[in-house]
Image (tube, each protein chain N blue to C red):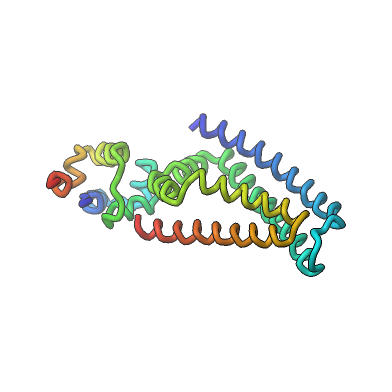
Length: 68
Length: 150
C-alpha cells in the first residue's frame, strides 16, 4: 500500500528510528511500510496518522483497495 | 509497561529454574553414560556429546536472556526497546506465518524426544535427530523468506 510516511518523515526531519519508537514498532517495520512491502494494521495506521496530526486517509493511500 | 516489568521478572525466575534444571541434566547424562544405547561405540559417544551439548547451549542461551532482562529491568529505555522488539506487529506476523507457538512447541518436543531416545536406541535417536535438523532448517529458511517478503 502506498503511504506518505517517508514524505512526512522527511518534512519533519525525523529518522525511521525516532518514528518507530514513537509509534511502538521496530525500525524495520517503518522501512517495510515505506517500501510498500508491509501493510500496517488499523492500530498502527491510527498511531502513525495521529503522530503526524493527520487522518489515516491522509497518510495511507486506499485507492488500490477501493478498486475491489 | 509496569505489566511488562512483572512479565520479565516472572520470565527470569522461570529461566533461572530451567538453567538449574539443565545443569542437573548435564550431570545426569554423565551418570547415565553407562546406559549407552546398544550399537556402535563411536555413535554412542556422539549421542552423549549431543545430550551434553544441547543442555550446555541452552544454559548459555538462558544466561544471555537473564543478562538482557536484568539490564532491561534497570533501564527504562532498554525496557521500552525490548517491549517494542517483542510486540512489533511485523515480527508477530512473520512468527505467525512460520507457525508461531505450534512450531516452537513441536521443536521443543522433538528435541526432548531426541535426548531421551539417545539413552535407549541409536536408530531412533538418528531418526529424531534428522527430523530435528530438518525442522530447524525449515524454520530458519521460512524466517529468512518472510523477513525479505515483509
